[in-house]
Structures are given as C-alpha cells and as structure tokens.
Amino acid sequence: MKPIYILKKLINFYYYFVGFGLGISFISLVYRFFVPKMINPHFLESDTLYSSNSIKVVIIQLLYLGMLFIFFKSIELLTKSLSDLSEGNHFSPAVIKNFKNSGKLFIMISIIEISAKIFTNLFLENKLIFEIDTSIILFPIIGLFFLYLHEVFSKARTLQNENDLTI
Image (cartoon, rainbow, N blue to C red; front, side, top):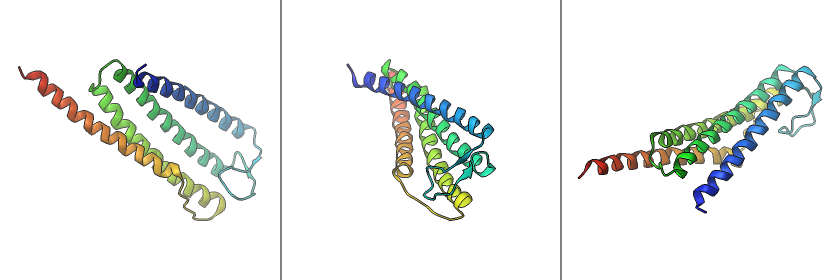
C-alpha cells in the first residue's frame, strides 16, 4: 500500500475524531451554560472554583472552542488535499490553495492559543503569566511548513504548465 493511502486513512480518522470532540465540546459548553455549577478549570493551577456560566468563563471556553473549530477546518483542508494527491493530481490549484489556507489556519491557532492562555490567567487569576508549551511552538512550525509547501507546489505547477506547452 502506498504511503499516501495510509496517510489519507489516518488523517480521515483523525478528522472524524476531532469533529466528534468538537461536537461534544459544544454540547458540553451549552449544557454548562444552562445548568450552572462550580468548576475548577483544568488549565489553571489554582484551587479556585468558578461558576460555569460566568461571562469570563464562557468567553474563555468560546475562545478554546473557536480554536478547536479552526483546527478542525485546517484538518478538513488537509483531507481534501490528500484526496487530490492520492488520485495523482499533485499540482492542482485546490491542493495548492488548501496548503496555503491550512498554513494560515495553523498560525492563527497559535496566535489564538497564546491570547487565550494570557487572557485566561489575566481574567480568572488576575495574573499576567505567559507559559510556553509544545503547541505554541509546534503550530507555527506546521503552519510555516504548509505555507512553504504552497510555494513549492505553486512553482512546480508553473514548471509543469511550461513543460506541457513545450513541444
């Protein structure tokens, strides 16, 4: 079996897995908003309890849900690209455009994550803390890699078109 088919199956499985997690997260957010209880957000180090329907907690949860949705959309673009790539359409405009958009979305995810972590600590803990973890570093690297792939595939498409025009 070619590696592209294995990659396509794995990313499709991951796409549905992330979509399921996004759906559960949205249902959980709605449930916690209408059935308020005291929660201790797992991303904070303190033992302080917050109401699950306080405006600050809802805004922060919406930020994280938005970040998950953008991640879901970037994975969706990759699944579309892998469909074309597995069919042999290596330099199609759709693949090139999807690589560019995926790169931008991954960079956007990192910016939103940094903002969400700063605002979470600022709004809930009244502390200005900046934490670095692997996702803050990994998402921009992945985004830049897809932007680079966009450029490479764009040049390859141009060369292919020029080659097709020569006799």
